[in-house]
Length: 454
Image (cartoon, rainbow, N blue to C red):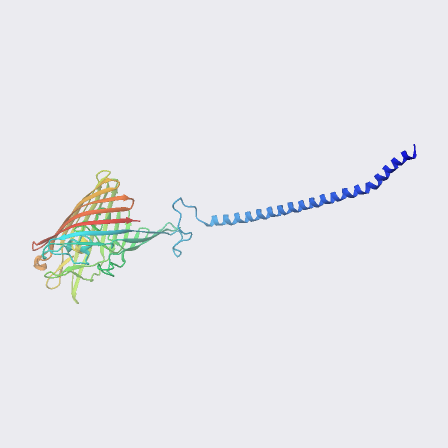
């Protein structure tokens, strides 16, 4: 081997020896860079794991709170029945008390003609049919228009079934058929007046509402506020009532109205010391209902201190509704007795008793009846035709000839309901009042009504 040839392996070896440390150094730097990247990735993974664990804890805490709220809340209500607020509006009431609000907006308009003078402005006879207000012996016929919203109404109910199973209830109902706060020339404002206010406990009722002597289920479907006013039993007063099945009995607030000797305006005595007592039996079936009621009451008058007089009043009434098919029904009521004038015709036709010259009273006898047909022509249209009358046994030697002997009326109406709870009605009314003298007066009226109940 020549020197030149020996030098080549030596150079190669020396080159490899010199290059080896550099290669080792370069490999170590890459490993360090790789280790740094791995450490960085491990840190990022650890951070993600910690974030995920924190989110899981937060979700579990949120779910726990939601579960607690769900347990505290009542069951979900059906669609359309959810309350408008989350808490009760009767916080002082028994748990589970249901509170309801309802009423109606009603506007009445009337065109009236009377043959013997006009009915005084601002009196009830201008707002609805009041037979005792029909003028007799006046200065000839008169025609006039009236309109009002006094019969609009609001009511509030509360009802509770206790854990014991006992049932509690209460109602307050108002309308605006009360004292005027304005006048028809400017504001037409009227004060709210109390109609019903009572509480119920199981079968007991205590408070002011319709008399037990009155059958509200037999009332006619009238456009006029009352309808067969001449004959209807129509009294609202304080009472205590007990109901057991078809039977109801009550003791009710007493009052005596007296026709003074020789005629004149009635006297409301305020002298009674014994409540009126009533009892009613009602039988119901698919065909309708039949009801009979009795009334016994004290009549008492003390025109001057120490001059006290009393008598006993009593009466009976039979009423009902009979279905004559799927779209026709017949409604009726017949009442008779002595000393029951306050219970008939809104106490505007006759009095309970007649006074003699000494102030002693005698119960006034009489009878009243109405009957009507109701026909449903379509789901949106119905009509009614009915007649009502009452007759009274005045002793003209005591009353004179200017008192009412009888009243009667004939009504026909149509009621259109273009939408649920919305009614438009028109009713034609003819009424007549006859005095003991034989004189009479007539009323002709067109009564219109728009009503939305809610």
